[in-house]
Length: 261
Image (cartoon, rainbow, N blue to C red; front, side, top):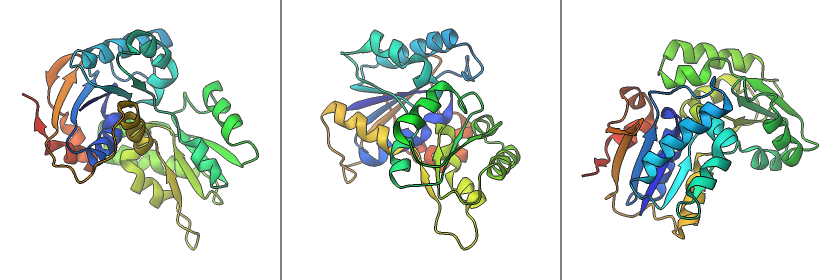
């Protein structure tokens, strides 16, 4: 079994680690775009073009499923990716976990990039899944970029700034960018109020990993032998994990995976 994941940068690490934990016997193909990152400031047309190129590089390795490990690419390019690749290659998008967060009640804060915060896309998700729940949209200026570059000082500053915009009564935070899952513990510490119940964080990594297995007709097998291999594509060229990925537990987990031959 082979599963591919794509993103402009290391935001895909959380979903990749989730797949690895569910199926350590699965071969993994990571397709990144260092030549074109970041995708966020690009026009929708540019994002679609970059995403298609990265996806086709992954598809050349004949995976059974492709996870779009990026909220921005999902918003702008999922339709084009599915039109190009399905039904031969199932494509799984990444959607902020607003629905399960709202099911637990509120108040909720949605941490997302400034471009996503207040966007019709996010507002539609809130209207569909969180009607009647108190929701605060929190723009996280610079956080994705800080995580991408493993810049500890910038991460701390961006988390503190977003935490200051998060109401004290919030009980649940939706991590609306895949990069944020890599610093979930720091977000929890910054938002958690003394004496309050433990803060609930909702990311997307586990859900997309499980959905990829369902599309493959496979079951989780975390006890399987760790025989899966790792292929890393950098704007279509075979390479290795970026050094900054090793700043995170998810990246270090993948460092131990044998390279594909």
